[in-house]
Image (cartoon, helix red, strand yellow):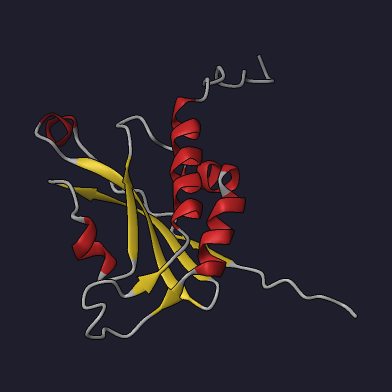
Length: 138
């Protein structure tokens, strides 16, 4: 018998919200966000926020977030580095209708997978940066 593996679909939004030096100095930050769409689907994006997001508010919209450093500049590379836990997170997320027992969270998800995503994002931010490639025409 052949076993099938459900593949997660990760939609990466390439938009990078710009932050000015003034905004950074006045508390604005970027957040790495994963919107759990259900059925193995997730949308990954960056957003700029003036004040820290509140977990309960974001869970109502099925969005998980992690604060990024000011120098973060490579969403696609970060997603590639954390692809396995991101796909697991998307595969295991289940959208829910609010009920008496659960009025706030619109989604259940594997918290261990989210922790692995956060660890991957943190490792990506701390990785050694290589020197820029040299111009081959020089």
